[in-house]
Image (cartoon, rainbow, N blue to C red; front, side):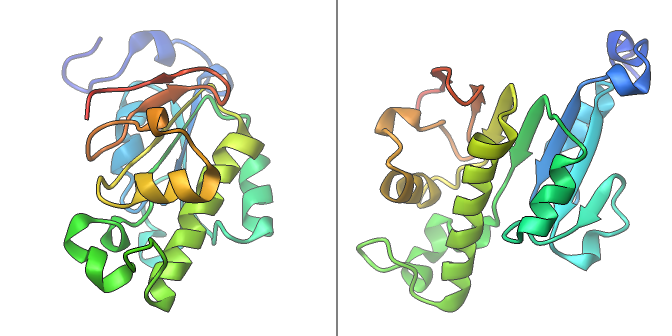
Length: 178
């Protein structure tokens, strides 16, 4: 390991096309995938906001649109997928403004964010099938919405405010205590 740059000489010794690839969905500034990049992985970042178009390795697209998902799939297969759905609609500080007591969206923006989070979840598991994936889990809401809308077992909780990692779509989760 190069302690200055944080790169992994093993990955860097591989030709670029043989290096593992990480897909970062809802990437924003790309912080979730930066560690992968520093370890020599190839990275593709996707966000729907044009303000992130200058972030390296980023394409702009709406993940709820089939054309965007098809464009991304052409870059795969992906070894890892990471995502942090926009937590400003799911965090504990805004639950009352965005959600009813029976976990229904209270406004159009919350409804759109729920659609995005569920689309991303299904896209990762059903379509991309990466070896590893991590979904940021704003503790107060997203976990519960996945349980309700996708019949995910309570045991799939991925722990903590920043989620966790699950190996493959059909393997048991690797979870941390919550």
